[in-house]
Image (cartoon, rainbow, N blue to C red; front, side):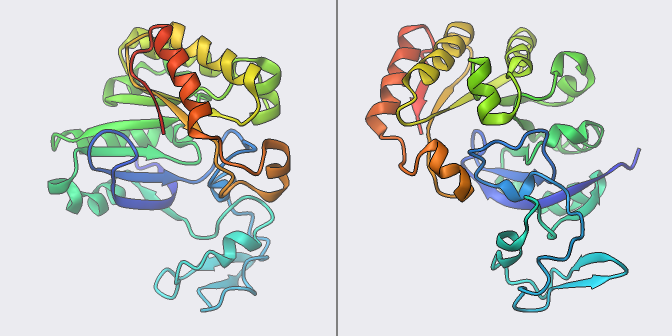
Length: 280
């Protein structure tokens, strides 16, 4: 098929993106614009406005025929362009084919258990993933999807067939709280949770715990824990303001969720049958 996808970055070795040592591939573009996103520069594709160009200290960015061009060789990864961008985007992406990504990551294969595709929202490029995953799995490596809950996996059995599991975010169970956080009622994520459980492809579930939001936190944790039981790990993630856009820190809090508060919810989850719940 030779579909191309916008790749934001490739991290050859990561031990926080699934089990074991993994290569993490971040795609550009997202279906959501979560208020607590830690990498908001992956949310939208570059519109070539040029706001990032003047502040680039090495001249790695330039305007050419109305487009912003990025020279990776001259780039020092200072992130000045990300701070200057008013559109939650990045000029530092590469449009790549699945074969190109495969050949770039293959050098890490002797040292990794598999790959994890993330974003942004990697499921925007499902056709690309269905090309990439068989290439990787042919070498005995696992392929995990880091999903934000926007994709209805039950409608894509072909993608489920070629992936080894989905690490799924359940951001909120309460529809109003979900609308505030991500702009929709979160129903699709809950449907995906059920579908992935039935398909045996649920690798992990994650929920962020916000300080002082007792009702919202508890409803989400109860909903998830009662459904997944001991089927997979359940990560109770402490909200951290670092990386969150300044305008949203005032709404969500400028303090990191205390470990003790998060542990209360992990204990609740375990009491409801989610025996693999833990705090990160």
